[in-house]
Image 1 (tube, rainbow, N blue to C red):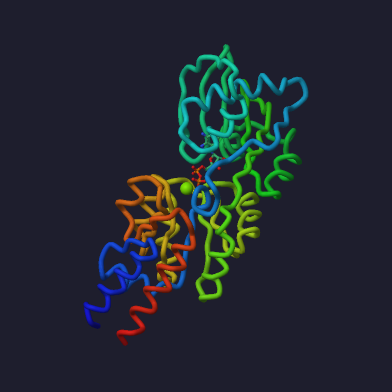
Image 2 (cartoon, protein in one colour):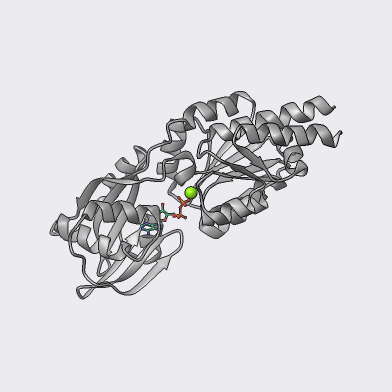
Length: 290
Ligand code: ADP
Ligand code: MG
């Protein structure tokens, strides 16, 4: 193995907008067999939009939206942005006792009501029945939207279906990677039904869903224990432990600083084509050395 050709490979990658931390990273990249993708912001645009609002009988839609938006003022989650955008310029009530429940949702009190906003797992945990909206939850999720549920005073009140589109070049990039023989996996905190619908659109056959933020690194470890050489591709702060655990962490350009600092490879463009380029270059470089 000549160090010179590795250095040339790192340089060549840079021409493609792919920053490789060191020679070792390029070497490890050439041996990968499994690529794990974060969903939100990596496969998708990361710009979710509310597409449907559905309330239970007796709950006013505008009021449900006001209360949900009031809670989301305290959250930095991309889903919070979607609900705030939908509520637009309405003046929102003050929220007390606000809490973020990582990977689940948010809670607080406003206008004398106890509020809980998040996924079905969160409402299930709290013993809040979601039956009244089950059909709509399933319908939205199977179409690839994320159902965000609002409970008011311990009762299900509304569903916000939030859609985050795939990035334009995700599908062709994943096709390239599939053809190159990699096993492609989606890793997400979102629910299984939504995740599977988006994975189908993306051309990804394997889904690990409903994973809490702390569980992402563990999910990577599990694949490694099966003898896999794993890359994790992500953009968020909450992806950093999984990026560190992977044999090669790949950070999307424009993502969080923590992700970039942790990753062995950083893409200057926020495009999965960079992943295909990076891996092709790593293989070509190492092949020349054998
Ligand atoms: P991801 O893997 O997409 O980054 P997260 O772990 O951040 O997922 O969140 C998992 C799920 O928890 C979301 O899909 C959503 O259902 C729920 N959730 C988390 N934060 C919020 C929030 N601020 N508002 C509503 N729902 C939330
Ligand atoms: Mg993300």
